[in-house]
Amino acid sequence: MKKIISSITFVAFFLLLFQGSAFAQVTISPTNLFIEENAQFGSYMVINGSNEAQEISIDFFFAYSQSDENGTRSIVQNDSLSEEQYSIADNVRAFPRNFTLAPGQRQTVRLRVSGTNELQDGTYWSRIKTTSTPETPPLEIQSNDAVTARVGIRVEQVTGLFFKKGDVTTGITINGIETNTENDGKTLNVLADILRTGNSPFLGTITTEILNAQGSVVMSDFVSTSIYFDGIFKQQLNIEDLQPGSYQVRIRFESSRNDIDQSRLVQMPASTRTVPLSIR
Image (cartoon, rainbow, N blue to C red; front, top):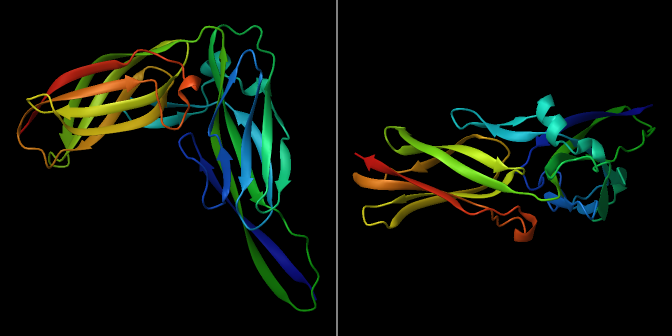
């Protein structure tokens, strides 16, 4: 008699902003890795917090986030022109690239960047795709008829790799700010038309504030994000509790983030712009 083990695989694809998968319990640290021209090497840690062995594989690909004219962000992966100009995916190697982690075990993955002598000054990037899959058990022969379905969860965690060469600069110019409301006036949409300057992406924090007639901040929200090219930044605020009257909307872009050491970020002067807002 045979006991047949069938395997069902699901794929979860996590991009940029996700800090690891609680479902798979395989975590990665850090989630943004920076390599300097004079170093050529970097490393990150893969930790198996699950109760079963995990097969790990490492790959690299080029992608970036971009927003459309409505401020809706999406991931772009098929931009061959930008890939030719800014990708470091073909220049990086992982050691080891494939390995198995026992429960509770951790592994340092070392990255080496090569072939960058001809690159101009600036910041180049790649995505690191770390795939984890429960180790496949051997087929067992049993003395009874049974079919057991084993659910294998394959999780792809995507994190950032940035390579800085030479003199790196970045900046944000706010060309203009538009506002509109939806949801019966309860939600305020703030759309900033921005120009990214310099030779490096902006990695930082964007703070959106509403000020009353006395100049006091009555509402504030922020997001830590990356801006690779020109576009529209959109922030939504719940204004249903604000009284009718005259206000101001202020947006500030700063090259600082709570999840990344300040020394790793390409610095720039804070960029701020304020526009009037009337709530009726």
